[in-house]
Structure formats: C-alpha cells, structure tokens
Image (cartoon, rainbow, N blue to C red; front, side, top):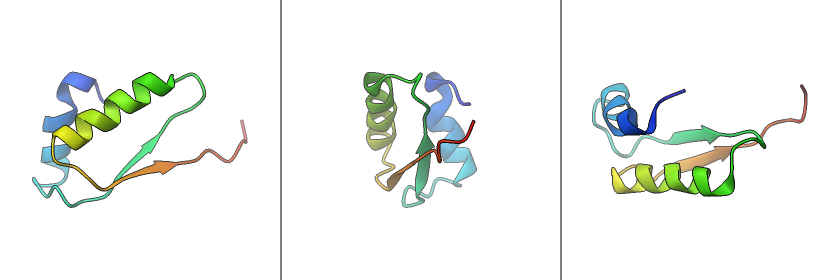
Length: 60
C-alpha cells in the first residue's frame, strides 16, 4: 500500500518517470467508490493516463 501523499513520487521512481506505463489498481469492497476515484484522479493529475482496474476473483 502507498500513502496518497507519496503516490506520485513513488510512481515516478518506480516507472523512471515514464508516464505511459500502465498502472494497475485493485481495491476490495472495504474501499469506497469515492476513495477509489480520488486515487484515480491523483494518478491522472500526475500524468498517468493508462490506469487499469483489477478485479478480485471472489476467493477469500
């Protein structure tokens, strides 16, 4: 898990500043829709436009 306030710098470091890298997000049902959208907006504002949502397969 990455804190929101370090999200951009962490991704910039992990991707070597390549904004065209695909970013995968996964969230369980405990994460509100609003929180997920906030993270997606943070990514978009940071220049990461290739965002994919990863579904959970339902297993515990």
